[in-house]
Length: 424
Image 1 (cartoon, rainbow, N blue to C red):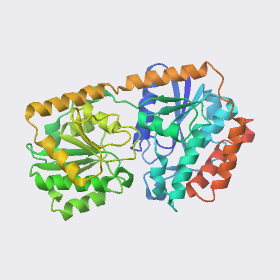
Image 2 (tube, rainbow, N blue to C red; image 1 turned 60 degrees about the horizontal axis):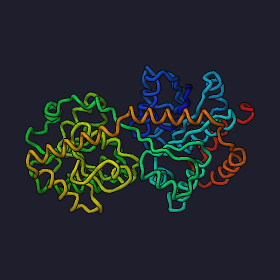
Image 3 (tube, rainbow, N blue to C red; image 1 turned 180 degrees about the vertical axis):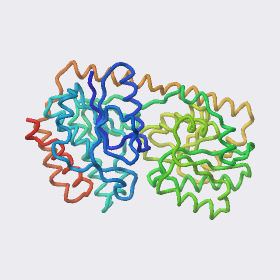
């Protein structure tokens, strides 16, 4: 089948959604399906950008690492008509998601939407951030979901949340999954040596975008508390972002800067070695929809300490593959790290074994097959009639665009990238 993937973030941007789109795209192509990805331009786009339509975009929107697509009239029409998609898969309700809705509506194609993100957690990237803005984000993403034919929820937590918010479209749980085989190799000792981390150190690791919604000030405070009590402790941080300075300040204040190590963004095989250099993976985000980095760490045999939150609770089982903490308490988090550091070798081995066994349950191959099965089911029936709801949604966009500046970009990009006159 011909699958049109439409996303606001894609390589070389580093983030969960971009990686998810890449993993599924590769998986579909491996099974003989054609995939065209529509995504914004980024700096340093890969030379082998196969079957990707790049839309001109504003770089570093609102000081973030995101690109926001510019309104280019009719930019996609010819490419989409030449590709002849069988199904449209949207990975965001805003910006390119609006365009995906128009494509599905005018070409009468099934529309799938993966609810990757708890959008209300990201309104701080928009001027005028407020509780009202968060409610708008929730309301609009829910309305968007009800215009689709199928929702993919990355976890049970997200599926439950969507039902509570009033999503009536069928929901399937399809996590991104992990390429388990990628984490079989790597050299932890070699990576430690390259980073000047002592061989005998107890390494707490973290991988991800370093941004405020990831709760990194709490995490840094908890790891520094643990490091004050454990002389062998070092903190290895993989990634980059605006919260890097805040993490540094906490460790500087505690006199621990020499035990903090930043690497920037890494890809395989270096990323595998970075995971293998860790004794425990620490995670405090409450804004996730799935635990991608958690399953990666576990695939490398690294137990996890995390807060009980969406994404983490589906992956971490307390005392089986790490520690799952019910409250956001710096002392409790530090004590959980101490508990793992103090385990006897055979107990640590048991935790590592539990981590690996858990990772095997989140295979990317399983996820790809499940997604393709849902696509096939959708193609066997008529796509949802969304005519009235579509025009209601369009009217809503016109009402809110003056209050939320990101929706100004959304309205312009959507209305002109695929104008109704060109699609009739």
